[in-house]
Amino acid sequence: MKSDGPEIVVLTGAGVSAESGIATFRGTDGLWEGHRIEDVASPEGFDRKPQLVHRFYNLRRAALRTVQPNAAHSALARLEAAWPGAFLLVTQNVDDLHERAGSRRLIHMHGELRNVRCTACSASWPWEEETSTHSRCPSCGDTGTVRPDIVWFGEMPIDMDRIIARLATCAIFISIGTSGQVYPAAGFVDTAARHGARTIEVNLAGTATSKAFHERRTGPATETVPALVDELLNAHHSH
Ligand code: BJW
Image 1 (cartoon, rainbow, N blue to C red):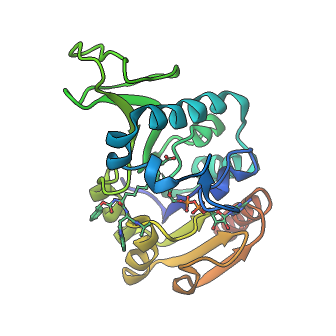
Image 2: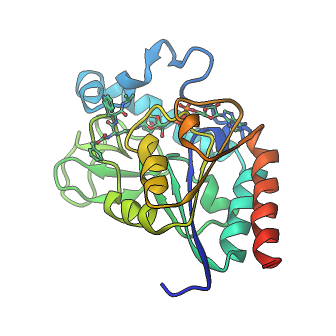
Image 3: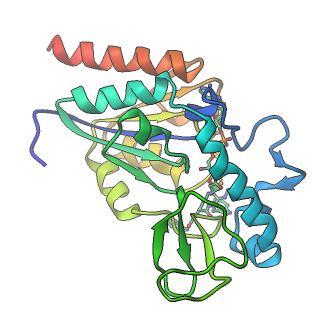
């Protein structure tokens, strides 16, 4: 795409949705009802205890109806709308709060809670209700083959080629509310920096990858993200 300004890539993680009331993964004890995230978000965990995994995602899918985008989501939608260069938002989040705030150019690299798919025929479709080991695939008619359309540990994240290409061309890379513990997302800062991007981390606290960034903004996303967006837009307009 031809454009007049520098390209921005933004990566977001659970911290951007925390103030909307969605729990982060590696919070106080990092457990869901006593289960480790690796046990409910892995193909092995699903094979072992499918009912448990369905329930985990059913609860989180239903919880989406009770939460709203916050000021950080809105600020990123505002940046996308006003930025004169190419823009891409890559989110690790499986909630839909970025879309609901108005973001359009985004990739859900770890999948989406509001989609499910069939392990038999690979069909995927939007689904806002519960799933179970008895759910039937509307495409091939099999039962017991429906799973959340989520990227679990050991599975390939979505659209990696496109993401890597954009990390290589962007001038500014911003990482917001992610702990830098899960790869490949945790390595994006290195890829962007190697290709010459200015890199900025926005988080409540230091992370596993803080040292890799040129700049850091510390504080809650609902305050730091709108401030950073203002700063970027003002700096651009004054040139
Ligand atoms: C705030 C805030 C506020 C709070 N304001 N900030 C050994 C070494 C290296 C890699 C591996 C390894 N062993 C295995 C791997 C690979 C593995 C991996 O990285 N494991 C690590 C745990 C070591 N990765 C994979 O398997 C991935 N696939 C893969 O690698 O495929 C092969 C491949 C090869 C080559 C190229 C490419 C790929 C798949 C990873 C799938 C992750 N899935 C999950 C669960 C599914 C989604 C779901 O169920 O909801 O995705 S795990 C979970 O972690 C979820 C998240 O998207 C992801 C990242 O978490 P995030 O967003 O960073 O959240 P938290 O909780 O960790 O952090 C929150 C942050 O917010 C904190 O920093 C807070 O301070 C901050 N915060 N409130 C601002 N108000």
